[in-house]
Amino acid sequence: MLVHLKELVQEASRSDYAVPAFNVFGYEDAVAVVRAAEEVEAPVILATNLAAVNHMPFPFIAPVLIEVAKAANVPVCLHLDHGKDYDYVAAAIAHGYTSVMFDGSQLPLEENIRQTKAIVKMAAEHGVSTEAEIGSVGYSDPAMGMKHAYSDPEEVRIFVEETGIDAVAVSIGTVHRMEEQGADIDFGLLHQIEARVPTPLVLHGSTGVRDDDLRRLATSRIAKVNIGTALRMAFGKTLRSEVAENPDQFDRIQLFQQPMEAVKQTALQKFSLLGLGRNA
Ligand code: G3H
Ligand code: ZN
Image 1 (cartoon, rainbow, N blue to C red):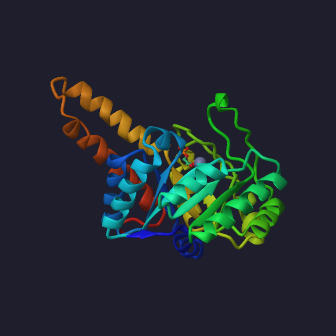
Image 2 (cartoon, protein in one colour):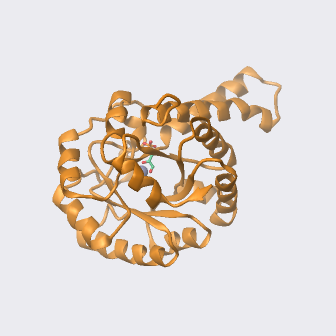
Image 3 (tube, protein in one colour):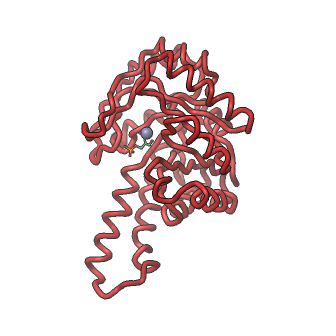
């Protein structure tokens, strides 16, 4: 069933689990992720970033993912990841997204607040949930030109109070697009933020988080954990093997079977670490 972010993260924030937000790029990985969620009877968030929407624009990707969500027998949220401007976020809402992230992390605090407030107002008019970022989770590739800055606990408090967002993304040591689990989470900083801010917290760049840290974060006030690169690696590397091992196979449906299974298995591992596994 298709649900909003707010209801998922409020519950997760109070509980010993966190809901994964998996970046998906089309039908195959979305279905694989939802199959994993159904297997463990857990809620899940399907997130599309700019690359996904450039590849498959809103009029195509939104109906596909909405139908995948509606057909699921677990709660599924359709979330816009890292929306950078008002019109782009408005387009996602117009196409039926149930949650949007406005990413003003590269802006000065006052401007981030001003633009986030405008997004919250628009989203509220459509009953859509909102996430925004304060501090900045950088990227492993410096060529992306994105600054990295830890969140200041007092700024996080001001930001959520001024904007009224449903979930706040914080920078506590993760970096986007790490291919190894090498992030050093600053749990002290997380506790300072938790002490000041009642709003459910979001962690970006979570492919780079070690398994034991993911387990620990699941029991914290972190309610939404964004995972992208781990699934892209699972799909892409398995597809490369399939192509190499089956040189005569040209049927894409056949070639996609093992990559979809690899995405499902990776998602199952992450569900388990986040307190939503079979034996959780
Ligand atoms: O917003 C998306 C995520 O933060 C994904 O980050 O690709 O490093 O797992 P990741
Ligand atoms: Zn992110």
